[in-house]
Image 1: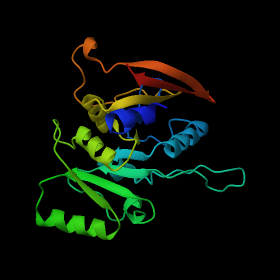
Image 2: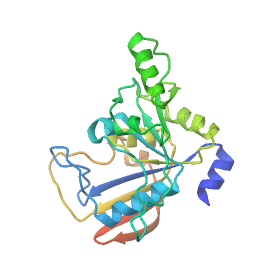
Image 3: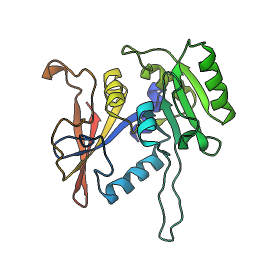
Length: 238
């Protein structure tokens, strides 16, 4: 059990990165539309992953663009929900998360942590924090990382102290890069759909990128399976 052994040895959660892309490596069209790249069976398997991992993490851009619930919606043959909902975590440096978002509106039923940058003592920040906490949101202040966002290593340490043993990242290309750059990613789930978008649309990983091939974030293929015409490649850290 890689999750168990990683958590016991490192005292930090086992982190997996998940994304769906087209055959030409795009996660959205040139207009930014992404629903749906992968097929129905692939999306159902993602909910199984949400069921398996203790927490699911995304960045504030995903919240602002998609207003997700980040819950598990597995159903049995009778249509009843049976999956375990993960703890939901949002990296939101300046508490931009809308009070009317689905995540905030359901925070008292489905736990939500919003990780923000420590040291912001402005009146607007404290007011927003109080409003979020009234709605059941846990605010976690974290140090600034090297690129100005949340220090993901510190965040993982804090979450490990809260007995969170595993995290599934379902974010955008920027947080994907930040997670890889920080070295916290142990596994990658890459869904590839038989579609081609072309153009200058986003790829799964943004950021500055590496300068030399030798500097690539390296993984090794551990498993491959298909869901109808989609391919899922599972990579683990070398």
